[in-house]
Amino acid sequence: MTNFRVRRALADTPAYRPGRPPAAVEGVTSYKLSSNENHLEPLAAVVEAVEGASGAPALYPDPAATELTAALADFHGVPVDHVVTSAGSSESLAALVGITLDAEKQVVYPWPSFEMYPQLSSFSGARQVAVPLTADGRHDLPAMAQAITGDTGLVLLCSPNNPTGAVLGQAEFDSFMSQVPEDLIVVLDEAYIEFADGSEAVSALRTADGHPDAPVDMAQALDTYSNLAVLRTFSKAHGLAGLRVGYTIAHPAIIHEMRKSIAPFSVGAAGQAAGLVSLALRDEVAVRAKSVGATRDDLAARLRGLGFDVPPSGGNFVWLSLGEHEAHAFAEACLARGLAVRDLGRGIRVTVGPQEAMDRLVEVASAFAQERSA
Image 1 (tube, one colour):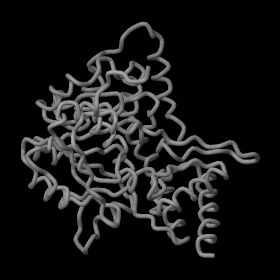
Image 2: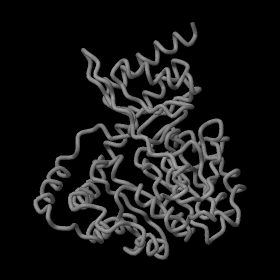
Image 3: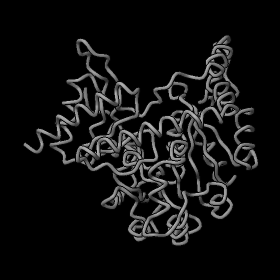
């Protein structure tokens, strides 16, 4: 029996494709650079918190993540009812899709961007309007605004954008939001925002067209736009991807509806404890994020020196814009050298890793560039 009573929308729903694992290559250490994981060792205090919270596995965690929610509200300067935690920001995203989309609605999002946007929206049955990025890998906000209709149920923005790394500027964001109906929820996915501080992407943004700009000020945006929901996560800069801790900051009316869609006990006791400690150590987290960012910018510059099109990135990754054939060939060349990168068809996303991995990546790119020009 293979024909079961499942939803029709599943026929058009792509399954999420995890980052490819590296192959074992004799004589070298293999590195996984395909999942945007933080390669740095965890902070000792975070490890202690996880160990301390793991002593009673038979007990449910605090379903409201009370302490962590209060700490996050304090950190962002918002009331507690403006925050809800989730199993990574992906669960928050799923909840927002769940409360806004159905077969009668459409969703507008940039493309290429986070691969779960088409997966989750397709599963809802909603019509997808994937608006192509600009030639330099940025959101085409005027086109996205034009795509909004009376049937639009949700708009998704990603800054820094995964996989291109582009950061949204305050001026372009405000212009876009001024064109969005006040009852239409706009999601600002900031999973990688901690890596953007001081990045090439931000520097490029400030000097775009000769006019100074700055990344979106989340606090200001939330005060101005009641229809905005900001997604954050502990998976990236905080290095807690394996513990699944994320959260949303939004108007209480949005948070209230999201709580109906987020599974109870979704953030475990270890994740709550680790999140609390890591948030308290945010200055150390910021230093580590800047270190990753410096490695990212150095890698991008070296790849550009070899002739690759690499836009400025505000994430913990770089994007090599390639055609589908070249992207596949580059990914295979990396795999042969013990490096797993993310082949997304029209380009390659490379997660920042240890310096040895970055040097080897550049060696592969150099050989690839030479073959390319032969």
